[in-house]
Length: 180
Image (cartoon, rainbow, N blue to C red):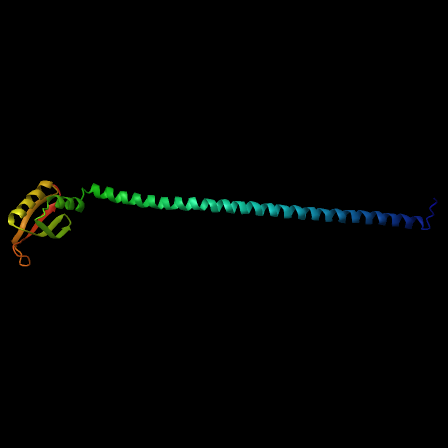
């Protein structure tokens, strides 16, 4: 085959350079397109994988929330119990206070006696009640003194109760604490 080039050599070189430049430009455009396509595919794949991981992490977090909530409730209960223990320790450190007096009253009282009023202000106690006779009041005073919780017991008043026939009303005062 014989090729006859009818273009002048300058134009033929220019046309060949133009075709080479055009081929290089098309090659670059195709490579850029392929790079964008591959980059987009990689990004989509990464997004899908990230969503799957996120769904797994959310499921794990939901599964862990129940024990965490239970742990939170336990810690709140523990704090409340510690507070209660602190209150109890404070009461025990003060020597019992009203609780010890009420225990002493429960021990000293008899079935033939009714306590109608109890007041404890600062360390002073005032006790009002009704008994069947004077001997019951005296026995109550003796048993109350024997507990050692109430000091300086005084029978301030003892008399007939107008509301209950055949009963004796009494008023006792004292100081909470050991005898001094």
